[in-house]
Image (cartoon, helix red, strand yellow):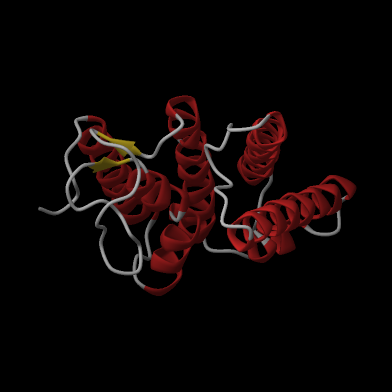
Length: 192
């Protein structure tokens, strides 16, 4: 987002957004690292009143960050960027929209208190990512959708050089993320 807000200039609302984003990410990273060091879950942990409040606070902060990012996306829709190629501006706009949609998909996991569909969290997973190899995993759609924020503008900057091409890539990318969500909700792994 630091890359994109540069295009919006030193507006007060953009500076506030930047500090909100930094605060949210720092809080969450510190809490996640602290819980990991203590051998405790940070996500879906409601085993004590304190952990339940902290999990709720993480959700509130994530929602704040997501809706603040939606506001930044709105600024990209209502402002002109004459120094930037139109296909690149559209890739930022669509990347932010997909980010917001699939960031909010994280609330499906929060409501379920689990990212695995068809079993309890844990078990064998894909190397590095640890996505379930046996059951549905909602983190996959969350990951793909949120990273549209980087993938679409990079693809536009280096490969796709038309607005029509950006819309095509964004549509295909959305369908990939959506289908991975549907597959996970059916309890099916990404790969067998």
